[in-house]
Image (tube, rainbow, N blue to C red; front, side, top):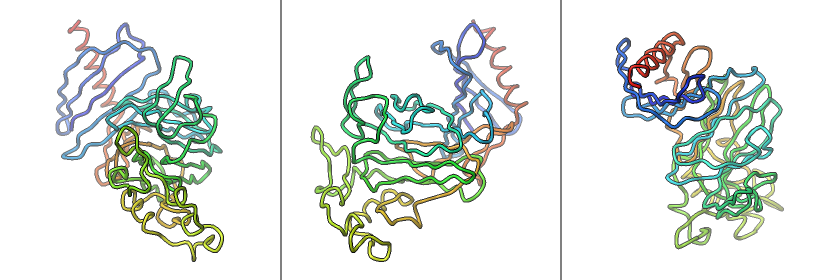
Length: 326
């Protein structure tokens, strides 16, 4: 199992990235390279290859504030920069930020928070945070104070004693996204996509930019009929049934809302969990969170448990090696 462990913001004269190779149960091999010095809190981001399966792991060195808070990790696995947006965004960097490919950011939201997270693409912002995006824009602001323009894939949350969460494509699709709860109790299923709907979007729904499909509009948005919008005579679950277009959306994102009454396979619950929201991933990819001296993963059949003493030993050996390498 290969782990890439980035350590930033430690009270040391330099900042380093440590590459760890954990072999069997006892042997530890590692090599170390220097990284750019960054001042921030202690954060570990781990990228693990377990057998043939890649998993994304994360650990915040700052303790979780209370069981009434939820840790959100937002990861960009797309090949290009994206600009995630969050409303309400007070606990999420003001509601908008850039994520480079492979980059992640962590936030904490209190119980009682109810909001949505989405990604923006092909944005151009100036130093003052003003600009525009090809998809998902919330006016001209980098930090969103209102909902984004459609079409956009949405992650929706209501945090309470039992959290409710879903991925919604009711207003269209612009990026594959997955929600995975970690360390929770209850159903706690993954929500979201296995594929990229932009690759199979019907031409009549496609949003084009520079000759390529950048998003896929909803049938309701394009045709504005009662049947596609689940209103009027179709304003109830018995009458509003899946259509040709909603089935296309469902094929790409089996556990996302493809139309308004797509509840049975689209809304999920979990208690006292952390959440990992990944763009351009799929539901089969495991994610991990470090709590209570263990690295717990969303895939229980391949879950990892690493004790604090072992992790501290790894870090100690790594830092000792650094002293001899500089």
